[in-house]
Amino acid sequence: MAWVNGLLAAFGLSASAGLNAYIPLLVVGLLARYTPWVRLNPPWDALAHGGVLAGLAVLAAVEFFADKVPAVNHLNDALQTFVRPVAGAIVFAASTQAIAVPPALALLAGLIVAGSVHATKAAVVRPAVTASTAGAANPIVSFLEDVLALLTSLVALLIPALMAALAIVVLMAWLSRRRSRAAGPRGAG
Image (cartoon, rainbow, N blue to C red; front, side, top):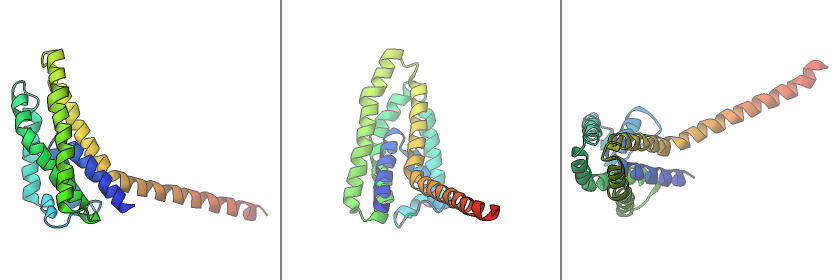
């Protein structure tokens, strides 16, 4: 079951990188550094290093603001055509290294997933938004893409942990209810 969760997380994270290159890398690095939910083996553990996290935060902020400015957003998308697939490859490989996916296959899969999401966004979605709103909606769409990238990254990594926590809560409630039913008849008699 762990390999399924790892593979699903890898696909979710690389898709997220197709929307925003730095958000999934930053989420993985922060969760690896500050929580037990993400474990990164070398060389991917470098994502949790303080200097790398600071650099990713700066790059995420630059991309966030550059993508909201008319005309600059098109230049940003052109640059991100190269960056986002690489980020997807890195995050896919980093999140599947514990489940023994061959590194070359992991990098290729992440590259394809992130590249496909970015290509769809840059070649289909953004031009349609620009044409239909004269560019006025681009900052809103960009913000929604960033939110979606963040939520997708968090869900990809935390759903297994949330599901485990939910299973524990349900089991504890069931055991508590069972104990109270068992104690009820004995306590009454």
